[in-house]
Image (cartoon, rainbow, N blue to C red):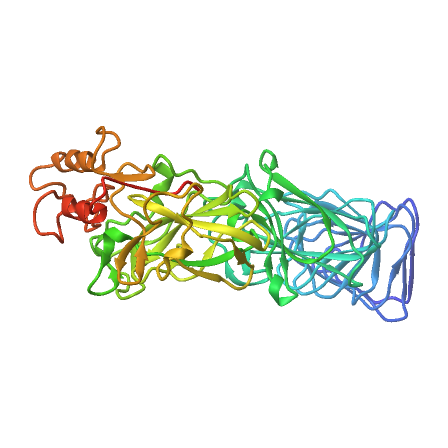
Length: 546
C-alpha cells in the first residue's frame, strides 16, 4: 500500500491493510503515515518505508510467515512482534518508544535495530523465545545509554538466548550489542573455544570512543556451557586489542566468582571502559602469562643422545588426563587442575623426534614477595626439555595473573622439583624462556641451602631433576622406614606382579621411565641400578623447600 497521508484515530482497535496474509505496507519518501494514540495497524506482510511513521500508536506484525521490515533507517514509534514465524530486518530500523515482543523473534542480519533514548526506547515482553537474533553484523543499539540499566535481549540464533544488561556510569552514548555464536581465541576472530567457557561472545560498541563506564550482567543457559566450564568459578573477560604488549583476554583469577541463578545463570562485571569482545569462562579467557621453562628428568635422560626417552609415549602409557589431580602432594591452585591432552599429541601415533612428549610435569607460579605458590599448571614435557601446553606446541600459560615478576618451579611425579633462583619477568604476549639444564646456578638451593646440589649433573655441563622419588616427598633415599625409602617402594612395586616385575605400567617406581618396574637386568632397564646411579655415594638427596 502506498499513501501520501493516513491518520489512524484513537479507538480503532486494529486495521488490516488487506485480507491477504501477504499484504504489504509501503510508505514512499515524503509521505506521512500517522498512527494516533491508541490505534493499532496490524500488518501481515512486509514493511518498506522511506519515511518516519509518526504518532503514538502501534504497528503490529502478525503474519503467518516470516515478515521483512526495511525502514531504511527511519522510525516506528511503537512496534509489536506477534509472529511465530519471526521477523527479519532488511534495513536499519529505529523504535522511538517501545518494542513489544508477544510472539517470535527479530532477525537482525546485517542491519541495526536502534532503540530511542530513555525514558522511551523500551523493550518489553522479551524472553527465551522472544528476542533479537544477532546473526550477522547488525546490532541492537540503545540510544544515549546512561545510568539507567538497559537489558539487551539478544542471541545468535533462534535457539540461543544470551541477554546482556548494561548500565553506563560514564558519558551517555549510543551503545550497540550483538552476540556471536562462539567464544574465540582472538576476541571476535580466531579458533572457537572447545572447553571451559560459555559458547558465546558479546560484541559491545559505542558511537563515540571513550567515556563509557559500563556495569554489565551477562546471562546464559546450561546448554551454552562447553565441557569443563566451572560455573562456581567464572567471570566476564574483555579482549584487549592494543597496545601490542597488552593484547589478549584480560580476566584475572581474582575477578572470578560463582555464577548466580539456576538455569539461566548470570555473572557480572563493573567499571568497564574498554569496549569490544566479551566472553565468559575461566582458563580460555584468563589473561595470559607466558613462560617457557626447560628441564631434563634424570631418570629419562639418555647421555648418548642428550635427549630424554619417550618410551611412555610409544607404549601409549601417558594418561590423557593430567595425573597430578589424583597424586597426593600435588595441589592445584589458581587456574590449575583438570588439564587434558589427546592421543594425537601424547600417544604412540604422535610425531617422534626432539619434540615428542615424554610425560606430564607440574609447574608452579610463585609470587615474588614471599615465593608463595599462587597458581599451578599440569603441562607436557618434550624430549629436548621444553615444557609446552597440552596442545603439545604452545608456551606454558600460567593464566589469570597480571604481567610482572614471579618465581617458577617445576615438579614431577617421581623426581625432585626445582625452582628458579631468581624471579622472571613474565608477560602476556611474549614468552619468557628459562633454562634449568645449562647452569646449576639457575636453580634455587634453599634457605637454608640443602647439602646436595639443587640439580643432578646428568652430562658434563648439563643438569636435570633428581630422579628416584617414588613416594612424592622431598627426598630420594635408599635407607629409612619402608614409607620413606624409595628402594623399599621399588621392591614393593616389583613384587606386585610376576617376575621380573610389572610390565607396561605408568607408575612412580619406574625410575628410568621405560614403562616397566625392574630390580634386575641390564643397567639400562634395571630401576634399582638407576636409583643407585642417582644416589651415588649418598643415602639421601634432598629437594630445597619452596
